[in-house]
Image 1 (cartoon, rainbow, N blue to C red):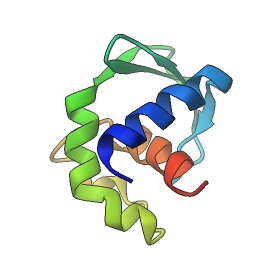
Image 2 (image 1 turned 90 degrees about the vertical axis):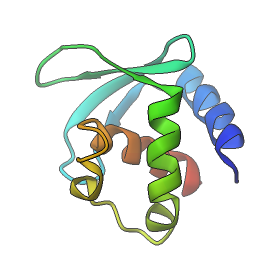
Image 3 (image 1 turned 135 degrees about the vertical axis):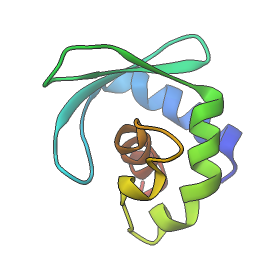
Image 4 (image 1 turned 180 degrees about the vertical axis):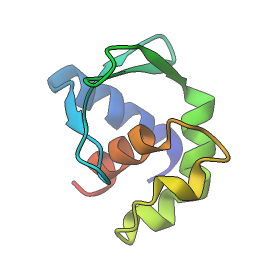
Length: 97
C-alpha cells in the first residue's frame, strides 16, 4: 500500500468510526476528517490537534515497516512530531486490516 492509498482508506475509516485508543498506552481519542488533515481530540484534554497530510506522510515514510512488523514506539518519532501516538495508531488501524 502506498501513502495515497492509505490516506483514502483512512478517510473511509473516519466516515465509519471516530473513537480510537492509542496503540501504546490505550488512551482514548477522537479522530475526524479535516480538509487535507485529520483532527485529533484526546479525551484527557479535549484540545484539538490538527495533523496535516504532509505530517502523516513524514511519519508514514519513517514508520511503515515498523508498524507492519508490530512495533509501535511513538518515542522513535517524537523528534519528528509530538503527535506520533495518534498517527501510528491510525496507521495500525489501516495496515492491520
